[in-house]
Image 1 (cartoon, rainbow, N blue to C red):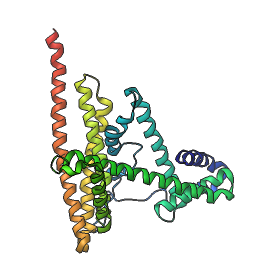
Image 2: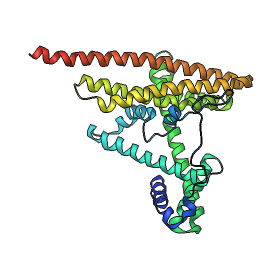
Image 3: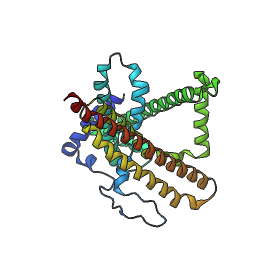
Image 4: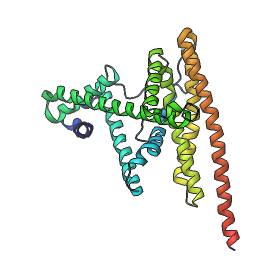
Length: 310
């Protein structure tokens, strides 16, 4: 279903400017001016760093780095399958991200899922005519739900594995996969019922890309340890590391300025996320420093090796 939605919608998007220009006209404004300086009492969304911590998993994602190591790797029959499977999956998701952006821009109204589905329905009319709008909309909703269910299943799987491996040594009952799964679902339900997830979600973009930067850091150190050129991982590591650290601080500042003044449970939730943001920031600094020292150590060993050979 997802492949069918992506394929047909992509064809419609390519043909729309030539066959049905009205569909290709974006309902959302193409450019929205954002101040580079913070405005008192208002959320601050500068192009840098916030553009790079949007949920665009087809470009870079710590979530995928995590799933790739604990999920995908276990499902590969041969190690050589890692490149086509991992690279192909990210390319496909990048295509889906572009399609989602186009579909939402075309629809321009309604909630996230509704705008995506309405946009897909409009793209279907380019190929099959107006009679297929409802079919395309329904297919868009179906694809959206499949994606949501897939991600939800992965979230609970990761939570179960984390609880079993990290907390299971202290609380043995959590080593049982059913107990750890139910516990994960209860914790998630509490986040939803208390409304705390709203503020946690605002940190997800920065924390996700920060995890991606740290994953790239590991790859960079490993390449240096293997005496290979680490440049293709090193430069993205530095950029994403600095960017996500900045985005974490901006997000914490926005929560403090816009949510804390409301008081009550909303302020409590915002303060909790601000604390988490600073903990993420400090943890990233420590890990980054450790990674830098390891990189320097392997660099020194690489320089000493030729001298020893002489």
